[in-house]
Image 1 (spheres, rainbow, N blue to C red):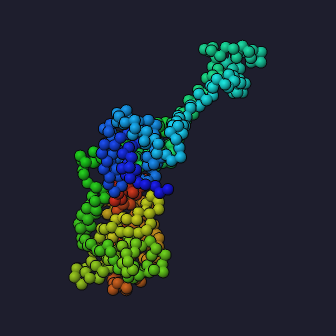
Image 2: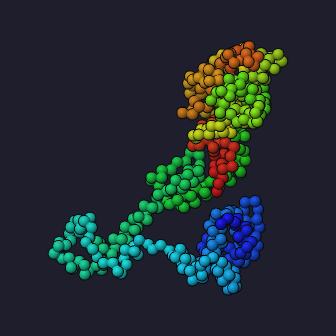
Image 3: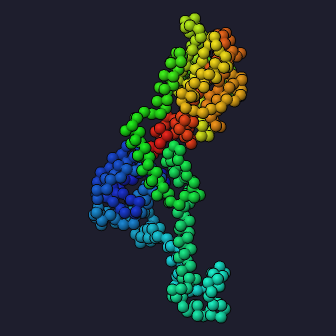
Length: 443
C-alpha cells in the first residue's frame, strides 16, 4: 500500500495523534515545502516535518491512539468513526492492540518481588561473607530465625532490599554513560579551550547539555555586545592591512577558472590530484589552493610595476578533501609572492616570521616536497601544516611566461584561526551555519 504524506492524512482525517497518544481535533493547518504547522482545537500549536514514515503518519494511517484530548472535546461519533477505519479488525481488537502497545514496562524491582515467586532463596556468597565480617551468628545454625525476621532494622543483608540496592546502583551507573550521539552533541557545545572527560563525568547528559547551552548563549550575547565581527572576516581584513603595509598589491582573480590552468600547473586529468578538483562542465573548474591566477598577474605587472613585483590575494578555494579535523572542501587562502630582486629564502622566511608574529602564532619550519612545486618549505604549528612556501624559479614557470626569480607562500585562513584560538575542529573556523566564532549556534 502506498504511503501517503502526512498533510494528506491530516486533510483526510481532520485529526492528530500526539506523542503521548492523545487524539486531537485540528482547528487550522498550514503546509510549506517541508513542514506542517498545526493548531489543535485545544489551542496547542506544533510544527512537524511533512513525512510519510514518521511516527505521527503511522499513527494516523493505522488509526491508533490512546485516548481523546479532553480539551478538544471531540464528538463520540467522530472518535468512533476514526477507530473503525482499520480494515479486517473490529473495535475490540483495536482496543486490545492499543492497550498492549502502550502498557508501560515494569521496573526491575517490581518483577523480582512478585507474590508468586519464593520469598527468599539462598543468600549470595558475598552477603554471607559480609555477615560474618559484621559478627553475625552462623547461618547454618540459625537459618530459620534469619528467614522469619526479615524486618529487623539492623539486618543489612535483608533479601528484600538487595534488588532495590542493585537497581539503584544500575541507575547511578547509567547516569554517567553517554551514547555516541550524546558525546557528539556535548563536544559540539564545548567552547574554545574547554575539555571534558566522559569517563569521569558525573552529571547526566541533560544536566550537562543544559549548562553548556546556557554558557554558549552567554558567549554569543557577549560577541554581539563587544565586537560583532566574524573572526574569519576580521582575519582577512587584518591580513590585507599587514601586506598592504609591507608593500604588496592586493589582487582578486576569478574563482571559476579554465581547467587548462590546472594542466599548466602539472595537474592534468591523468594525475590523481585532479580527482580533488571540482569540475564545472568540461572545460572549467573551481579554483583550488594552487592560485594559478597569480602567475598571470606577475607576467602582466612585470613591465608596469617597479622591481620587485609584490602581489597577494585572499579568496575562497575548493578541494575535495574534508577528512580529519584540519581539512575543508571550501576554505580561504592567502597567497603572496614576490618576483625580481631579493627573492631569496632568507627574505621569504623573514616575511613569514613577520606575518605570524603579527598574528601571534608560534610555528616551526620543515623541509618537504610536493608534486606541483617540487621542494617546499612547510610552516608547521604543532602537527598542523599552516603553509607551503616555495623559492623559484621552477621548471613550470616557462609555461606561464615567467623567467625571473620569485618567492611565495600560501596560508589557509581557517587553519590560522584554528591555531590562534585552539579550536579542536577546523569547522569552527570555517564558513558555517553551525558555528559563529568557534561557538555552537545549534542551541
